[in-house]
Image 1 (cartoon, rainbow over the protein chains, first blue to last red):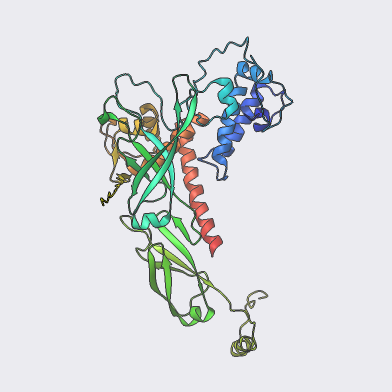
Image 2 (cartoon, chains in turn yellow, purple; image 1 turned 30 degrees about the horizontal axis):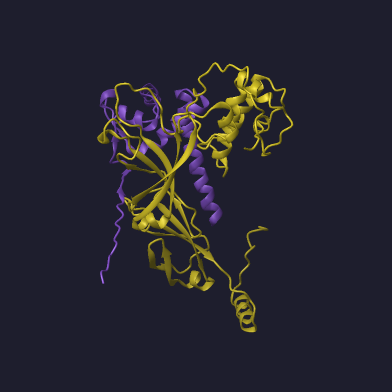
Length: 316
Length: 109
C-alpha cells in the first residue's frame, strides 16, 4: 500500500489547526467539485480531498494518522506499524459519511471500509422493500446517438463483504443505446439496480450519458458542428461540397461570396432526437501554398486583379 | 460426422431515455436523486424546479430535470448549501455552461 500525505493533499502544515483543516478543505472542495470544476482530474482530486478531510477533521483519526510519523512521502510503499490503532477508541461507527466510494488503500486499511457508493443512497426505509436505484456515468460515441447501437458496458461497483471490506466488482451489461440520446440525459434500465425483496422490486440503474471527444464533430445539446475546410475560390464563387456527418455524407452548397467563419445550417442533421438538432458547418478558408511557379503566378494575377487592402480600415 | 453448431445469442437491455416524456412524482424523484422530499420541496419553493401540478402530492417533475436535481443534491450535501444557495449555484452553473459553449464556438471560428 502507498502512503498518502493527507496534509499535502489539503495543502497544510502538520501543525494546522482544526479550523485550518476545515477552511482548506472547503476551499479546495469548491475548486475541484466535479459539478463545478472543468479540471480533467476534478473527480479524483475531489475524492482525495474527501478522504483526507474525513481523517483530519476528526481529532481521533487525525491523532492515529499522525502517530504513523511524518517521514513518509506521498506514494511511498507503506505498512502501518503493528497495532498502530492500539489504544484508540473510535467513537463514530466509522461510516457516517456514507458517500465517498473508492477510498484509497491506506484509508481502507486504517479506518475500515464499509461505506456506500456515492450515487447509491443508503437510507433507512423500513417499509420499502424496493431495491436502491444505482447510478453510473458512461461514455458513448456520437455515432451511436445518430444510429443507435448495441454496446457492452463495464461498470465497477464497490461491494462490501460481511467483514466490512470493500472490493470493486466489475459487471458487464449489454445495453441498447437508443437513437437520439444526448449527453447529460439518463438511460433508465429497469430492475438493474440493487436487488429488492422480490425480483419485481429490484431498483433501477440510471446511466448518465456523455460523448467521447470527437476529433471532427463538436456537440452542443442536440446540435452538432463541424469545421469545413474550403478553398478561397469555393468560398468566393460558391461550390457544391460533400460534408461528412456522424451518419454518412451529405451534399451541401457553399453560397458564393461566403466569408471565412460563416456558419451554414443543415437543418435536422444534428442528433436525431425529437425534434432533431441541426448540423452547423463552419467554413474555414484554407489557402493553397505558393509552392510552384504556376501557383506564384496565380497569386500575382490575383494581386493585379484586385485593388484589395486587407488592412484598409486600420488607419482611418 | 456430426457437426455441433454452437450459437450464442446476446440479449441487449432496452433502456428508456429519461426525457420530457418521463415524469417523476415527488417520492420517485427523491428516491432516484437521493435528495430528500423536504429538500426537493424547498428547491421548488425557490423556483429551481417547476413541477406540473398544484400540491406536492400532485407534483410531476420532468425527467429532463433529473441531471439538475442530482447536481443540486450533490452541491447541497457536499457544501451544506441551503435552498437559496443551491438556486443561485445552479443558475450560475447554467450561465457558465452557456458562456463556455459560446467561447468554444468563437475559438473554432
